[in-house]
Amino acid sequence: MEHIGGITVSDGIAVGVAVIVGSVERDTPELQVARARVPKEIERFDLAVREVAADIEELRERTKATLGGDAGSIINTYLMFLQDEVSILRPIRTLISEGRWEAASAVVRRFRDLMEELRGLPEPLPSRIPDLLDIQRRLVDKLQGVEAASLTGKLPKNCVIIADDLTPTQTATLDRQRVIGFATAHGGPASHTAILARHLGIPALIGLGSGLGRVAAGTPVIVDGFHQRLVVGPTTPMVRNAKARLRRLKDRALRDVGAARTRDGTTFELFVNIDSDESIKSLNSLGIAGVGLHRTEYLYLGRDHTPGEEEQTAHYTRILKAMSPKPVVIRTMDFGSDKWDPRIHSLREPNPALGLRSLRLSFAYGEIFTTQLRALLRASVHGNAHILFPMVSDAEEFARARACLAEAATGLRAEGVKFREDVPAGAMLELPVTALVGESLFAAADFISIGSNDLIQYTLAVDRTNRDVADLFIPHHPGVLKLLHMAAETARRLSKPITVCGEMAGMGLYTPVLLGLGLTRLSMAPSRVRDVVDEARRCDDATCRVLARAMLEAPGPEASGRILRAHHESFRRPTRRG
Image (tube, rainbow, N blue to C red; front, side, top):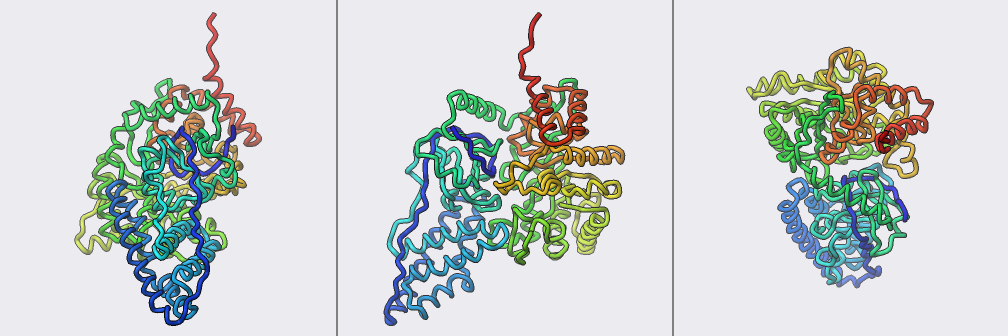
């Protein structure tokens, strides 16, 4: 048995057998042609481009029908590449006409150079490499008269795809009746494959590295998206336990979880995080208090155009109407080191995590920011909208963001466009400095949301997507807990709502700790709601407070971890009867 750690891009548990999908590399010898043959090769290339574009258009429509418009837009990105005269089409024709390269050879040469350029750039540009490789293979297949490789119709039931990487078109066409999960050696959280995995709703891990090469075809495996690991050759008890967890998840899915309260009746509020409007109608049946975080940057990723004001207004309106009268917290675009749109900001930065990202990027690209703010205000009349600004460092930066919102409102007012004048505006606490100078910021904001993922990253100087240091990403580190406690106390003093909406909020392991710190508003992936409710019902308010105090006073993460494990183990010990 072996555990291989990776990065979860789609939650859940899958128990099945491994199917190994190798990279399909065509042997494309570098051939040159006679000068008289050059016009014919250019003609063959242009025909291949048209035929591949037609195939992609057909796949896009199928993807829209099965996975929704957002997923279809990702496939549509391929058409953007196939229409790129400057970077792709014209250079390939030049290679054919001036270098006298055979069409397939010219395609491979140009795409190889493009992919090499992307490898040295910040994410998510390297995450586009599978897209380019997929297009290259499709073009070469057309030119060589070879049928394109496909994953459809060749797979057994309950299979887990194990691959070096999957292309977006492979992912979009996975048979959900047979494929129950996948794990790849490479890939990034912002890749199109990762985004499509979330649309498919199957557990998926990426970035498992070379260890994935040890997995043999037909081996029983468990994809555990909650613990970010692939279990290879699990024991019978582990399989039984995983299947039991899977049954519980299915039984609990999209059902009212009942009151969110601890064993002694102390109540708390649960919200959900969403990336799109695909599953919004089913969320109300969970019994949640509302949407605690809508990540709007996914509106921009994987598309051939930046969404305009009308499109954004319609998108936000659908969500607000579906959730009304419950609150929907909509975060303005939060591009950073793990999510990036080069059409908005193409400048290469040596350290994008500390560069022009999040709210800083919005200030730098005011026209795009204003378009989003206008759309949010226009949609606000259709529900209970809350606007959240990401990675706010202090009260002055928040005042600047609020001034941008006021300017957008002034423009709409002058045009006679209706919008809510009282839309709450909040700040996202993701930096240690924000907690340290929180008094003035908390006083200015209508509400606070804690982005625990970035807060932990910046506090501990650890990139959680980097496999080499991922084990140092420790949410229960006393330093992290002290910042959370400081923020909770400041919000309590100023009577400001404060919500935790990072991964930590959806992990039942940390539920009693957060409640003990005074953080009683938690927002998470819909699949995590039931586990958090169940965990809270096992403990009382006083126990949570004692636990949190002990962990705050721990000398380091190992000690705080032991305290937390002891707390959970105390509920698993059988009670002796006298």
